[in-house]
Image (tube, rainbow, N blue to C red; front, side, top):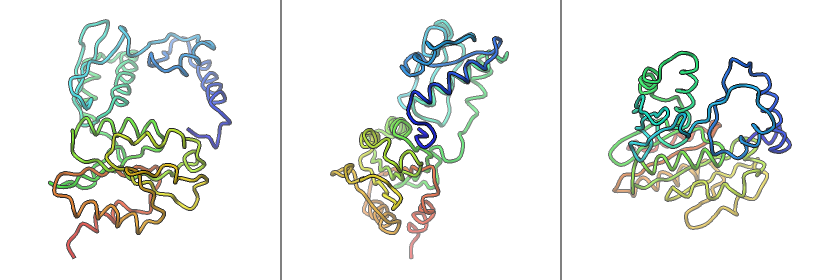
Length: 262
């Protein structure tokens, strides 16, 4: 991300290397075990104690397919359980890091798990804006392919075969300039349909994403009409996820307004 600030990935790694060098010896570097870029970064030099998540040192055992319930393991022993409204593997990883950091600061894992179980999430992270028997409308801040992918995978695990439509606005500078063009198309494949909004400030041809499951829309009016049409003719449950780190022209409230009877 942030291709408007950094020239390439190596430049980002260099900045994080400088950050690592500033962490004192009594600190702790917490990182996952399966990120090749992070592992390459750490090989450049790390002078602070490290804890690798997803290993015998600390790991999670999934108790629900959507990752909303899981236990925390320390050296193979269960030390706590988290049950919360968040979904997706990325949130499990966040929880592991949080428990590890709290433990380093003197908070026992069982207390950390209890606290995380009381966490209800933050605004714009799969925030439910509208919910009835036919429709659930979400607002999510996902603004790059990895976030789009993991968020939709978490929702799919939660809702099973119910229909999912992703409505995506490439609003960040990196997305607008097409840095993620090659991976963007497959990032939403967990959804049944994706509606991509091509603003006039997009610097690349988004038509390359178009196919029977991916529609390109270039104005808010058409976008809102398209979404409402999908809802009106639906008799079974449908989940619509609006994904953008921008205001998206206020389409969230306009869609909800459009649901009201005339």
